[in-house]
Image 1: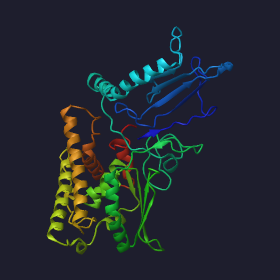
Image 2: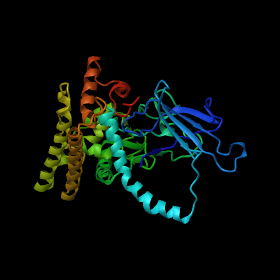
Image 3: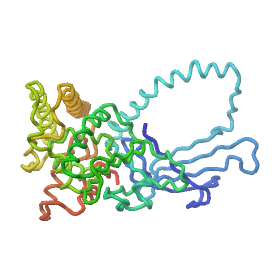
Image 4: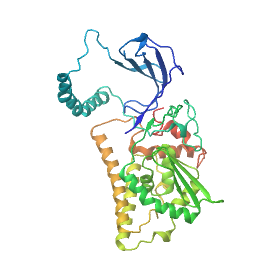
Length: 410
């Protein structure tokens, strides 16, 4: 489950209050809550001291305003424990408790999803609000020093959003809830790590994989002695190893990573050396393993061409070329079945998602559909080609501003 806590301190960066409130803050929105709102803009929170003037019973008054980037009010919500002075509080007696527990709460539980879908239908089809894809979360201490404009995070080149997650100044921790790593990603990690270790030893590359999700510990792969080539991989993608499995070539992974801004590679050359095995290492052990290896190649190709089918500009030949070998070695029948199952699941999920959205005529923010990742990548490729640069010095800057799904809402 994803979550984010905004930690606000009394007497620190407060603004003028309104009405009967005692404290107020304005702070950037950093969490993707609704698919019909991006993360641009701010929140204004006004609260009243619940024990103001020595009151015996707490008097709760919380007002939350969602503000646009120009700090104009867009949405409004309030939490009060005294909404109507004419109504008296319900007595906490056995009959009222039983009525609530046995009648009201079960219906609230089963009707929640239906009510959410009903409101989503109203907002999307009647109010004509577009859908914003959910971007990946960002950690505060690892990727940001200040709250404000985008800047390079310390230690790596992942571009930050215009509204980065606030810093955990009090060391409270657990303010970020990342998407849980699913079984397929765990399986893909287990399948690829031995091959990554082998290739790192063969090429003399020390690989460090750092995840934005603090629940995933950093990985140290390969030799680590003086003179060893170093490759740092920093990622906020929850399915990094599935992406490794699905990419036909290292270049394809690098291009989409730059475009989407989900992974930073300290050295493209070292990454390509690591992910490109020697041809002799690809020799299958029997005909069934060879057949499964070909099928996995076919699935990777079908997935790539499915995503390329949405491109409006010509596809550069370098994108569809190559893929003679893959770092995932075809060593056993069971291993190849596992890889094939993961790849087929990704291909099927992406196709079904696209078909369902088209069937119900759902509308994303233009150019931000999940299945148009290669459309955005190809557009960025030709954009950089016009500038006579084959490898931009900072490939994330323009893509984050213009096309990237991570920063689509800035």
